[in-house]
Image (cartoon, rainbow, N blue to C red; front, side):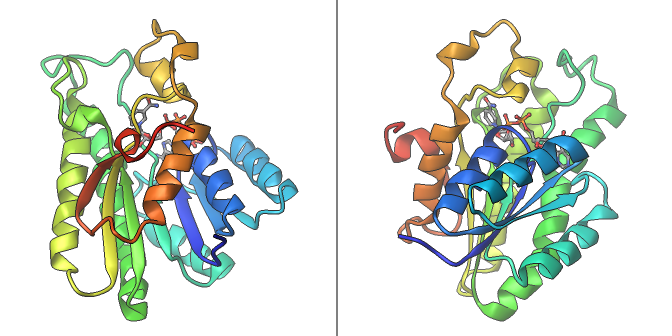
Length: 240
Ligand SMILES: NC(=O)c1ccc[n+]([C@@H]2O[C@H](COP(=O)([O-])OP(=O)(O)OC[C@H]3O[C@@H](n4cnc5c(N)ncnc54)[C@H](OP(=O)(O)O)[C@@H]3O)[C@@H](O)[C@H]2O)c1
């Protein structure tokens, strides 16, 4: 069923964010995409428009405190209001990923800025308008690393774990307001981030983010998934 909703996706130029933009666009969403690098972002926007999807580029860094309000202002200028906010952009931190003992604490802080504090700032920047309207969905893209303790994944995992819990607490604090907070673990996907993290992995063995985006869109459109849920995309349905 087609919708007339508006979605903002951080990290929308590549990988899962790009795939979500196409999948949600096909379902009628108007999309605004955030990324730092202009060329891939504009290429994705052009391809979305070519597919008759209304799409807008917002250049910004979710890890930069000063960018949050600018991102919200531009999104409102382009689309009026945002129904669905997807915290998808994230960083692994320094590569190859170091052990906690070797991790520079300032590098750890940068990972927290992008993966945790950025979503906190953006949720605050968009949440007021959602509260006034009595509706809105905020999705945080998580990872199995939020739960499983993989050696050398410390900064990323700690940030994703905190992101999951922050989402649950937002859900508690907004109970009854019409806002819905979900965390979704997409599972492994054939993307640049996966290649950066595990260069030895065979990319052909990994799911295409385009297929994972279909599962995530199905979760989003299912009203029975309550606020505060953590959902594994793979448990929600077989890959199409
Ligand atoms: N790939 C996997 O196997 C896997 C598994 C579990 C969870 N995940 C999660 O899935 C999500 C998407 O990952 P992916 O694999 O699709 O990543 P990806 O292919 O590397 O794409 C990352 C996207 O985020 C943007 N981005 C990165 N840092 C940003 C920042 N500071 N501010 C704004 N945009 C930023 C990138 O564009 P710019 O570089 O131009 O900013 C790009 O559009 C992430 O949250 C990741 O943790 C991925």
